[in-house]
Image 1 (cartoon, rainbow, N blue to C red):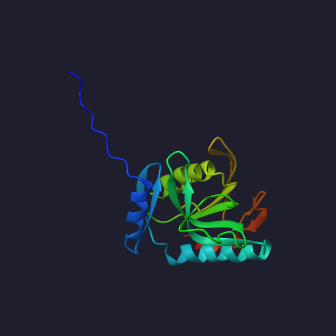
Image 2: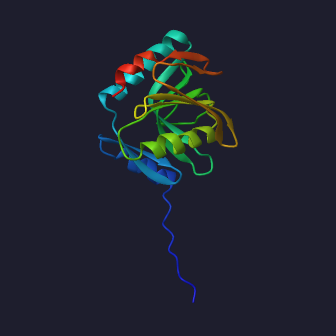
Image 3: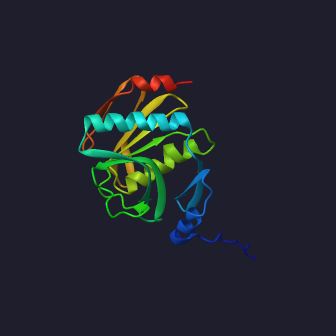
Length: 192
């Protein structure tokens, strides 16, 4: 006799989007690799880091905008939905977009780690894979746990093939098409 295995029902993208619209304001929902994930609303330091990055991007590349908390369609196969901490794209690039934007035109996705149990898997594994699969040229991760800044780039076959990790305080280059060089010395004030 063959053992019977039960398959878990798969949530559709439409069901996820309906669930996400009704989520409490204290959490953000994402649909990554076929699973619903919950991440907390950012704390004050998290927001300050984004504001620092937004100011730097606007100074260095006034033709671009860093849009915070954007919903992105990722993972072509699974039709994932990731809420990026921020996305960098040309000024006016979101005109006509709904809550969940196609990734075309996005030059870089950005995440700042949160202090929750899922941050390592989400920000170091699932998000880079989703962003690479969506064709986003670069992914910038600001990791508050180990006080580092990481640039993922050179997307190929749905994965980033290059990763450069430097400590807070170093100068890091985000390659074309973003073409931004960041002095991360101001991030030292957020080191614990």
